[in-house]
Image (cartoon, rainbow, N blue to C red; front, side, top):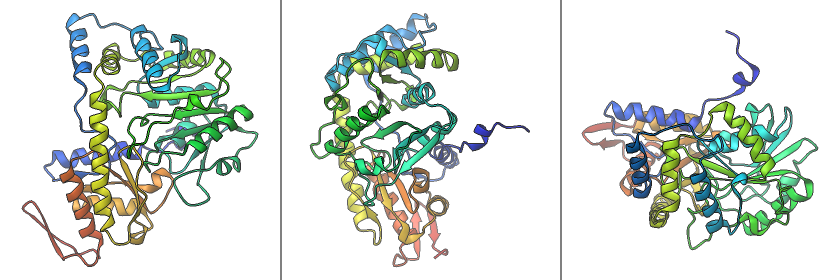
Length: 405
């Protein structure tokens, strides 16, 4: 069979593969604990459901414009004004099938073959593959100080004449690190000076902890004209717990949005009319659910940190936001894929290998689940890995004997 070079270069999404495997085990009746998912367990906002149901009852479900319905664009304009203090026009917006598609069409609109796209490590698993799909070269940057917090000099060292764009995801998946105001202001100034596109992946920007406030990239941008190369990505998946609705968007200069719209029109036409109605309901509706989710996630993070703190040899930086902990388990094995597979097979706990995010020896643990899941999940992991643990463990009626250490 003949497969394209790009097709051969693309790896399967590690997170989606894990979700599929966990779902199969759960369907079999196995008491799986999913600490790998990036999906809040909160119910979708009532305003989103009511808006969707009303539209469905009309029976008039039709095609939509490739860049999103006027109604959704107005909601995004309002969102951008409320949370970024930035007034934009409908022509500055494209609505897509999730923030992932918004990033993808942005990259397709700006990246030529062999051009480079830079992003700090650890990074979201899809960034390298999305760049490869454009024929570009992904360039991960590991902060020189070994932390999860990049500095401008880390980025500067890898910028070349082939650099086309930089992607910044803060708060960060998988580390939960919220980059400093100093770094954000410096990277914006740097990109403006070097005429490099800057993609701000802000999908977690409202899920921050410990009294932090979301940073607004527009506060540091000097170029606010239609020549700006700043692209801001957002969506309803995370803050509104609407992962299955697949609605995201990009805000950028009008010319770029026009090109992105042309690309998207040939990919998927416009996003689903039904799901755009849901997004409108969420954005324009009562916002208390976002704060409730944020507060729950902060508490869950504290619980997970407490349990990981009792886990000898595991090192973890306290997340500033999102719903992940990125913990260094290298004391128990340098091969994170092997380690994650063992934990799933032996104690039915799903985690995501750190190598998929650019750091070997780490595991990404999600705080989206219940306190019970977090507590029992970490306890199972500790039993599986800690040689000082008892030799036997009961999961429900199932007796496990540790015979692999």
